[in-house]
Amino acid sequence: MTQTAQVVICGAGSVGVATAYYLAAHHQIRDVLLVDLHPPLSQTSAKSGENIRAWWPVQPMVDLANRSFDLMEALAAETGNAFHLEKRGYAYATQDAAGLQGYLDHYRSLARLGEIRIHDRGATGAGYAAPWESQPSDGLDGADVLLDPVLIRQTFPHFAPTVQAVVHARRAGSISAQGLGMLLLERAKAAGVRELRGEVVAVETKGGAVCGVTVHTPAGPQHIETRNFVNAAGPFANRVAALLGRSLPISTVFQQKIAFQDTLGVIPRNAPFTIFMDRQRIAWSDEERQEFASDPAYAWLLEELPGGLHIKPEGGPESTWIKLGWAINQRGEEPIWERPGDPAFPDLVLRGAATLAPGLRQYVGRLPRPLLHYGGYYTKTPENLPLIGPLGVDGAFIAGAFSGFGTMMSCAGGELAAAWVAGAELPSYAEVFSLNRYTNPTLVETLSRLARAGEL
Ligand SMILES: Cc1cc2nc3c(=O)[nH]c(=O)nc-3n(C[C@H](O)[C@H](O)[C@H](O)COP(=O)(O)OP(=O)(O)OC[C@H]3O[C@@H](n4cnc5c(N)ncnc54)[C@H](O)[C@@H]3O)c2cc1C
Image 1 (tube, rainbow, N blue to C red):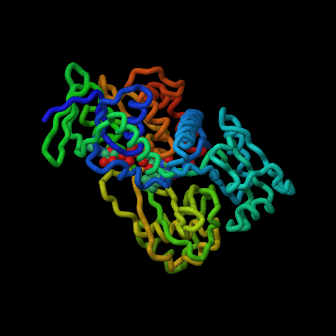
Image 2: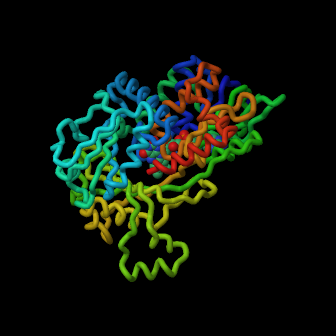
Image 3: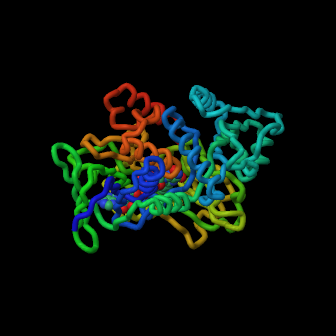
C-alpha cells in the first residue's frame, strides 16, 4: 500500500508529538504522518520525572528552556492548566556553603537567568517566597540562595542539620508530561495530523534527497511517499539515522527511579523537587562492604558517588507517594525496548537520599510495598545538548538527544524542529543545537566543560 505525506515523523514520544503539533500550529503543515511502533508517549516519555527548569549551566540551554517555559505557560493559561504546571522550583541542597561560590559566580555570568538573591544568616527570610507560595503566573525567576540555618530549617524541616545552603531556583517545577503530550497530540490530530502504528524500516532517497519511507505495520508493509522525514526515535535515533547512512554522536545511558508510599510522612507534601548536590559515600555495614568488594560488578558502590540524587513528593496533598532518583550511571549501552532495572538500585538510592533527609533511613531494609522501580535511557551527546536540525541528507531532520530534559524542552525543541522542516525563520539559538556545532570543536569543548561543571 502506498500513501503520501508532506512530512513523516518517526517517533511519537514527547519530541515527535511536539514537532507534529508545531508543524500544524505554527506553519499550517498538517499533512503530517506520525509513525510509531508503540502507543504515543509510551516509551522514554512515560518514564520522565516530569520536572522542568530554566536553571541551566550553559547559555543555549537557558535560552531553549526559557522558550519552552514561555510556550508551556501560554498553553497552561489557554487551557486552564490542563497539564498541571506548578512552579515550586528546584531546591539544590549542599553541606558545603563555601563550595557554592564558584557555582554561583558561574550562574551569575549567564544572561536571562534572573536575579540571584542571597538570604544570609539572620536575614529572617524577608523577601523570600516559600516553594508553596509560588504560582505559575508569578513571573518569579533566578534563584534564592538560603544560607540562614533558621530559614533552611523552617522551609525544609526534613533536611539533615548539616545542610548549610539551599539554592532555590524559581523558574522551575513540574508538569504532567502525559497531560502536555496528549494535549499537543489531540490538537495536532484535530488539525489533520495522522498516526500510523508501525516500525520505520527504510528511508528511501533519490538524487541525495528523501523520497519515501517504508513502515512495517501489523497489516503489512506500507510505503509512504514523502520529501521530509524527522527522526524523533528517542534512544533508537542512531538506528534510524543509519537507515540514511548517517551516524550521530550520541550514547544511551540507562537511568532509574523508585517510587513508594512515604507512610511515615518524612517528606513534606509541599516540598519542591530537591537535588542533593554533594558527592557521598554510602555507610554500608561491614558485611555489605565485604560482599561488594568481592564482586567486580558492585565494587563501585564502595566508592565516592556523584551528586545529583533527587527526592520529590509525587501527587497532590492527599497522596503519600514519593519518588527518588539518581542519574548515577555513566556507561553507555546498546538500547533495548524492555530494559530491566538494576536490583541494587532501590536500596542504594534510599540510603543516598537518607543522607539529605535522615527520616528516610527508617525505610532501609523495609521499603514499603508496592515499590515501583523503573528506568529509561538518557539519549545524550557528549556535551549534553540536544540535536535539532538537518540530518545531512536533503529533507531529513533530527530531533533527538533530549537526555534528561525532553519533557521540559519538548515545546521549544518541537517548535525548533518544525521551523527547520518548514524552512521558516530560525531563532538565534538554532545553529548551536544543530549538527553544525561540530564544525566548531572549540565551541563543543567549551559546552562540554561547562555542562560538566554545572551538571547535577
Ligand atoms: C528516568 C528518567 C527520568 C527523566 N526525568 C525527566 C524530567 O524530570 N524532566 C525532563 O524534562 N525530562 C526527563 N527525562 C527525559 C525525557 O523523558 C526524555 O528526554 C524524553 O521523553 C525523550 O522523548 P523522545 O520523544 O525523544 O523519546 P521517546 O519517548 O523514547 O520516543 C521515541 C519514540 O520513537 C519510537 N521509535 C523508535 N524507533 C522507531 C522506529 N524505527 N519506527 C517507529 N517508531 C520508532 C519509539 O517507539 C518511541 O515511542 C527523564 C528520562 C528518564 C529515562
